[in-house]
Image (cartoon, one colour):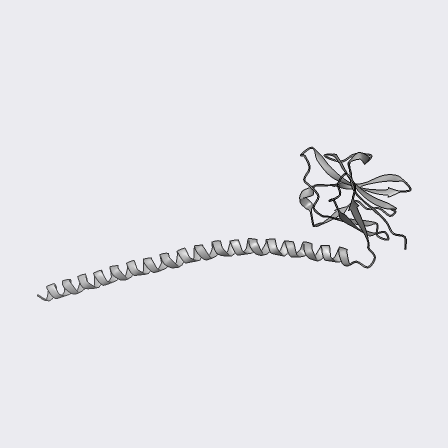
Length: 177
């Protein structure tokens, strides 16, 4: 009988131990799953944070350009061909930096791009090309030390060596100080 008691006590202990091991395994699996979920959530939040941080950096950079006391603002108005194509050029002539903010310019065919020009003594100087999808952001363009006016034309993708005047969208004269 004593062997029977030992045997049933050992069985009871074995059953309790097995149940305890199963409970521990379930607990650790639950903790592991939660950890995996938290890691995935953390990666997603980090990606969102990085995106927002990048946007904030761009906004700060744009604000710096717009509020630079050395920059003058050249308001460009749409032409008769494109009356709703306004833009602003932020030009720091001492540092020769040119930045552009376009507003509501229509999207072009895939083989076309807008091109910014500086007009210097009646001659055009290429300041770079851009697409309409960049509306309402500050675009850094090529530098120029001089300009009497700025103009935007529609050109073939990649730009042109001289402006297509029939496709001029906006123009703005530099005000003399």
